[in-house]
Length: 232
Image (cartoon, rainbow, N blue to C red; front, side):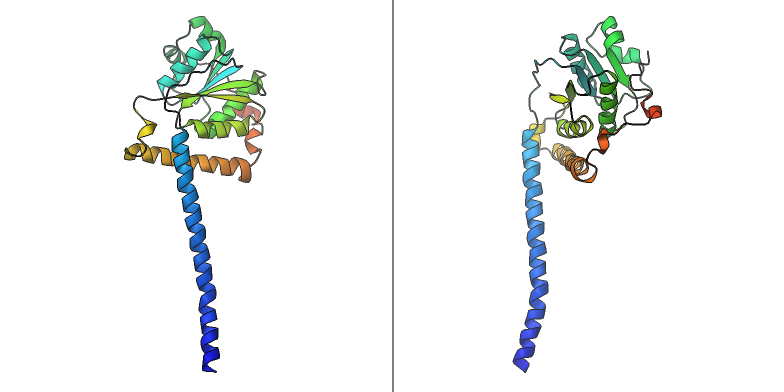
């Protein structure tokens, strides 16, 4: 009797023990996958300035630095696209201030540069870009996307969800003040890239599993009123 009781007691402890081991194994697997993904993400970021020679219907630059805007203006000036959208412009910034940052003529700026003031974040950039592209008949065309190298994967994920029919060409801007190759030795760079990686994973989860197709839905007319607003 005592032997049977001990056996039942051992089996009772064994089941929770197996569950704990299974949970621990799952945690270790997910942690390993996360770390491996982070390493791959960090290594995939562009180290050198992009050299893009394609012709596209439009150029889109996500604000965040004057160097991004300058590079996007250079693409337009070289004739690599017909129009330029600067998305996420600060509402206090006027058109003439933006014009000073671009290597384009006043005539080219007036005819072919659109300023988007509505976007406040990357998903807003994607939606503003989508509405601008549709307004100019290039929703299923080709776009050159200009943003910083560490931000590019997330930007492309958002834009691909918002414009599933468009062909996107990344033009990554490399900053002199942030060297992504130092991600192992510079704690500040490690933190920045890790934060960007987590945001990138969230975008993939949201656009592919939680809200597939939602980013491509049209906004209400009132929300699209200032798509190509150009405050001169």
